[in-house]
Amino acid sequence: MLNYTTYLHATSDKWVTFVHGAGGSSSIWYKQVREFKDHFNVLLLDLRGHGDSKPHLKDAFNDKYTFDSITKDIVEVIEYEEIKTSHFVGISLGTILIRNLAENYPDRVESMIMGGAIMKLNFRSQVLMRTGVVLKSVVPYIWLYKFFAFVIMPNKNHKESRSLFVREAKKLYQKEFIRWFKLTAEINPLLRFFRSMEIGIPTLYVMGEEDYLFLPTIRKIVDSHKTSELIVVQNCGHVVNIEQPKFFNDTVIGYLSSK
Image 1 (spheres, rainbow, N blue to C red):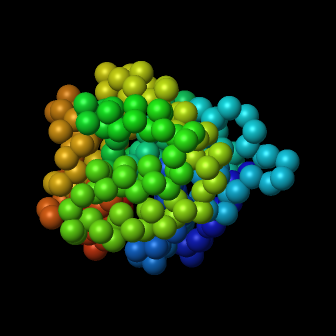
Image 2 (cartoon, helix red, strand yellow; image 1 turned 90 degrees about the vertical axis):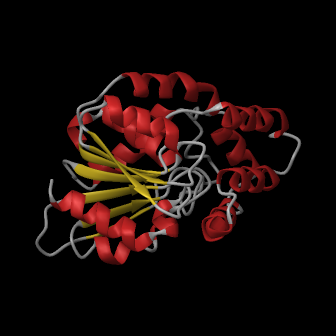
């Protein structure tokens, strides 16, 4: 089972589950935990191979890495903790997992907060993925990760986010990076399906105005999905919860408190 931490609220029965992105860990939510646990029960987890969810000698995660299998990891924790429903807060690739969880386990999801959401790979990001596919077995993964991080978070004000994700990614193994990278083979059809199907669960997209790779697609999705809303954060890039934590916390807590 995944490594995870819970914070129980004295009176609230609402749960908020945080899902980080590829190469990160639950530590990326350090600017959220204090405020969120004052309002809700909080579940933080490390995805397989990340943070403290490292495989043992006899690999606990030796099944094929798919979005469905990784999503099931999250559901197993929720079931073990007897959490009937939760709001889900994700960043970057974590938003894909949350959307997939909502598709497969809709009764578990009260709402989705999608920070730096990935719902389409544009031409530039597809070139990045193809480059990674070619080089993943011959180039140290951390070189690739640093390059990807710089392309996705290029500005000076993105430096903290970029540095944090690279620091967390260094804790991965080359083998683990390759396993996760192979998920790119199924990402395009999955995202195409998500864009075409409105799921009917309240969804708040929180996107940086400088999230050049992914914001344009989210604008189009919100225009066509009636249960979706979009907040664009000024002077902010891809990792909105780190670059603008106060705005992110105030906005998301206000949204969740109304549900």
